[in-house]
Image 1: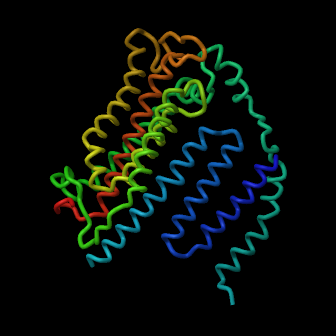
Image 2 (image 1 turned 180 degrees about the vertical axis):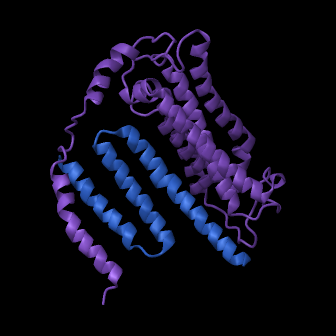
Image 3 (image 1 turned 135 degrees about the horizontal axis):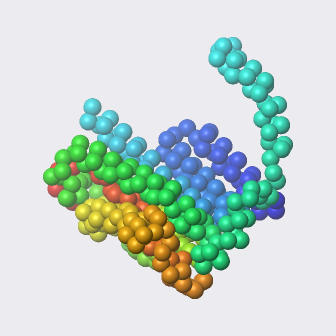
Amino acid sequence: MNLMIQALLVLLVVSGAGVVFTRKPRRQVMAIAAHGLVMGLLFMALQAPDAAFSQIVVGTVALPLFFFVVLAMLRKQGEDA
Amino acid sequence: MPRPRALVFFALVLALLPFLLRGLAQLPALGHYRGPYGDAVNALGEPLRHVTNMVSAVNYDFRALDTLGEELILFVAANGIVILLRGARGHGTSARAAHILHRRREGRSEAQTAGGRLLAGVILLYGLYVILHAQLTPGGGFQGGTIVFAAALMLYFGEGYAAWRQLIRSPLLARVEAFGVGLYLLAGLLPMAVGARFLENILPLGQTGSLLSGGLIPVVNLGVGLAVAAGFCSIALELLEETRESGGEAA
């Protein structure tokens, strides 16, 4: 286990804690995106670049986008009611 | 005073923690793979299928039937989302981009538009590269398809929703997705027409390292890439449409 993997694991704990301890939903979505990016870098360091591609696109781009869409939908429904 | 439920939780944690630690202590060290199959595939993939990316050899050849199942799951999921959301809104309103009522329209900066266009081109090219080199380098149809989807999203960030809907057409997405899944099914059925088994690799395997090596692998991989890119795009399109008031004049 080399230094880069250890550093990324520590960073993963930090970004994961960031997701858990963030209270505002929109900030939490950005924290999830950061967490996904760290996870993608960890996959890259573990020599799984193909898994890293999917992780970065899905975890850092698609998942936060869908969360934002759901938050926007909730806001819209709140205005309708 | 903690609630009884929390007390039960912590008591169970204390009771089960030794078992978890014992199991963790006996895990193989990071990077020490002990199963026989990975080594077997690494040894046999190149001589049997003339490919250098063993993940693709497993996904699109040795276990291609499993990948067909995953492909159909994504296809059904994307179709389900489109049918549910578009059906609830009404089909007539889906051709045009909806807009958000009462929103103050703020112009986006030139830097954002330029950045979106620049990134979209580069990311699209990279996604196509990853799809086309599935049998040679890490990546493949699924990964490349998601990267192409990311390129489409960059256009959305750069151009705005209405212009994005002009570029990414829903009927085209449906056709590309259906073509991708159909290509995979056809690649499975055609071998049966010449007397081989379902998804059996009947095409010439080609030169190891060439773009057309691997026989059927590039074909089914292309099907997966098209279906994944179009499927993700349709899901994003329907979800984004859901945040807007449909039926109004698009601004």
